[in-house]
Amino acid sequence: MKKRVKVNLLKERGHTRSDGKNIVRSLFKHGAVETSFTRAKKLKSLVDRLINYGFKEELTGRRLINQKVAHLVTTNKILEYAKKLKGTKKSGFTSLKKVGFHRGDATLVARLTLIDYLPKVIVQAKTEVKEVKKQNVKKS
Image (cartoon, rainbow, N blue to C red; front, side):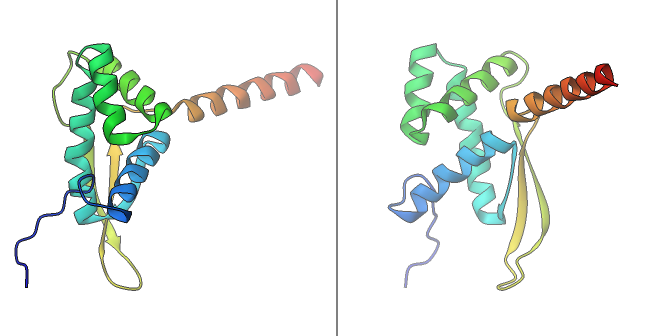
């Protein structure tokens, strides 16, 4: 029986590794993710490390991030976020809050959010709504 086995989400094989990559992708797509508490704790340190890679030189940081995430759009989002925060702080880019429990197995659920992150999708949707309202007002 193995005891005190630590799990690193991006060093494990197969499903665990792809699960970690997918959660990081959706975190930078939506700005927040709900997952199990232990998985969120592991991802918090990983996301902080990825953003710190973005502070390095452009090509070096891009390669290091893409090596871990393996998704070009997410890599670009991480680099944009790092560029926006460069010089303000060195860590603490994510916040972790306990939300509740899973219904079936009573696993503790946590919400991992990026601090000062507004996805482009939300910004574009808000501007489109304003433009539609302006067009409706002009027609009336």
